[in-house]
Length: 341
Image (tube, rainbow, N blue to C red; front, top):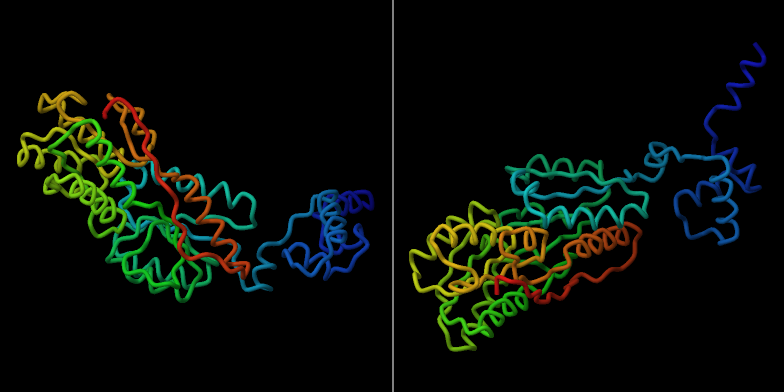
């Protein structure tokens, strides 16, 4: 019986007190190291971490949360239809970058994909204390409640939110530059009747890509009126491309505001008997897997989606640690040339 008790004691989980004895420090010092306090010398921190590793000690997250009033969790909010979320490679790249950064932190990631009325249930959840902060991706102009909540909970936005003020932290690419780059490529290969399929114009990314396209066209002295709006989906692009071709039958080039949408555009061009790039040249946006998996490899504007996700998570972790961070974080785009243009 005594042997059984002794065996149970040896197999029990190591405690904070055991780590403190192993490292020859106080229990409070171990707690400070576990919680990432800067008030511990590097030598003491190394001794405590060595004891933690030796004993295979796992901190009690629930107890730490109660003591620090933190949850150890971050929400990723993507207010889109689930079909678009799971079908668009842009989101998988963003999530991959976020996960890569959080792997080196104490935070867990909670994914929220509110398909309708993100203001009600999502806002209640974010403000409940279940998460310490939030990352917002694919933000629309109507999602005002999410922008307002940035005053109450630390947030970082992926993409410049509409009507942004200086207090909001966001990561984006230079979409204006990207739209200009796409149009300039089509102009450089001699195309004259150039159109564009935009994303939803309640999103600044789509508005800025269209503005860049128009700026390059106007500089070249060519009309910029061949514009159709879609919703960043394949189905939306198919409908928009059909409308565009019906309206502008002499179209000889098109800038499509995402690679995924461009695959729909390519399908319609095949349907109409238009050869790519001979009859109609096509430029996409993202440089996602959709650009190389389509029937005709896409010339496209590269945006560093995974690195955007990584930077978003890094900025939020730094905000939660009380560090100052830059509010406007703009990354560059570049053209990737392939067969379609």
